[in-house]
Image 1 (cartoon, helix red, strand yellow):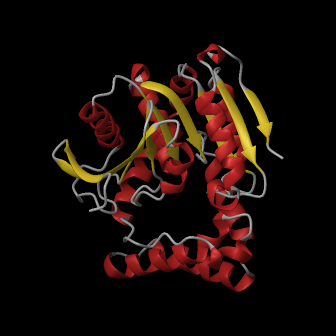
Image 2: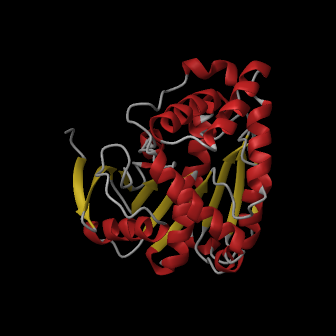
Length: 298
């Protein structure tokens, strides 16, 4: 195993971790759920400013596939890693589903979070789902759009190996729609090193959807006081208004949008993404209490 990588057992589960850099601690939470860490390029943007930890969440990648698969357990795993490494507080940076995890962690453990980055999150208003689907379908060629709809219909009654095959084909069809330049998708880094855990994904998404639909998250997010960066790509098919809503709820936040970038802005626009992250990490604590602001990078 390369230097900086090791398995850490927390809550009875062995999690793959990687550590690089020096300085105040930060942790990166990958998306999915059910995927694995793909945030090494983001860590490299910050490792001269921070000691950056990455990990595969339970059930994904190089970590042990052991339940339970629920939000409370994933929050507990994250805090157990903090305790294992001996930090009182750390910066928590989450991407996509990981952004939701980071936000929920800040709600559950407000005194453990020194800074929060909500990178390409989905927001907390359940209305985002319908627009997200519409935006992704619009990026598909007509024949692929029809195939995608057919797969969605078949997925309703499928199970076992048939469901797994449908999920894999469906994900492959949608992969390029995550990016601003879908035509250049074949030249982008691949994220198929490890299998995707669809059962985990379904369980956590069901719970997350129920949390959104309950309406309780808005009040909880409004109580988040930590300095927060909402960062996204202008071409992310997940609607920007949903992240802007989160930015309005967190009074001590800034919303920065990277143009000509999709769901993984560090892939298509690394310089602009690095600049936004580094400026945020270097921002003085005097910003505490500042009102939310919105910025579009040029």
